[in-house]
Image (cartoon, rainbow, N blue to C red):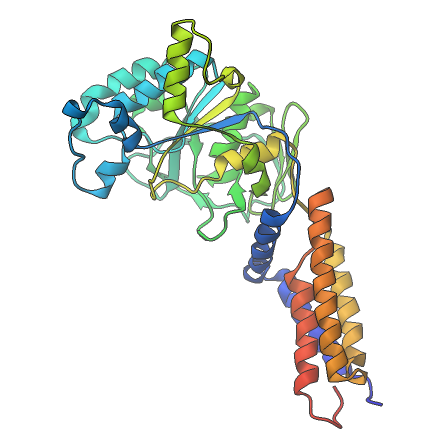
Length: 403
């Protein structure tokens, strides 16, 4: 019989502490979470948010063939829309009285289209709550004073984890900015992360709301002065909703909530608007758009942020948060596997390998079940890494030596 191995106990503890405290290793767990969420079975009611995605081809199909001109060369021209096309969208959607209309692309047009901008502004001034995208960055010529932006006054907790910015990299012209509310579309620099969306950002020492949070505040008819923030813990909205946030001010999106977002095409929108104007029975019933949040996107534009804002809003509206097991669960895993490491040498290699496979499969099924039933997430990378480190060490240990 092999003796216990105290050195392996120490290795497991040190490796477990590294995994539990290293942010880059914790991101591996997000990959497991995203995969499990996509395969979980959750029932989520429809959200009060509608996504409208429109491209140049949608407008070309509406144009008579004899008047249809070839698109200009260049990818930017093919994916962009003119102020007149934006105005046509606003004219149609306003028929259904949404509470908030948000534009995810930044409203910047070419110089030759500036003469059409007034047409868009005339329609935009009719919108009850208009949300326009802006992007924070370094200091530049188009910066906006902090006093002109919505900021939070009731903030507690350490701010070190928030993304910091000193200027604005992209924003609409002042004519549009003055009739709208800005929402910042900055996302984490890691483009592979599709389940985290910022709720809070830091601009010149002040905390400002992201595009997602600002859309909700407009929808709730609230201001930043009504919101209480506990950094690293939660955002408390005036209606009592509590939004759990991480230390970096991000929210974990439930990808399944994206299925509760209403999707709308331009053709259906224009048809419903025409039937409404002519008092005909609706072919497409869009009455549910009343008092909703409507978000506008351009189809096929890789320069836009990933399509995460609607899913984030739906997650909050439905209280469909994914909650991770408390921090002490990680330390219990580390302690338990470290103790097992002391006695792993007493188990034959074949039995240990098969047992590890069974434990891994059972743990994964348990995690999937808890995620589907209770939206409770068990960490995956930590136990899997420690368990299979023990297996590998046992397999490579020569016979007759202590493991």
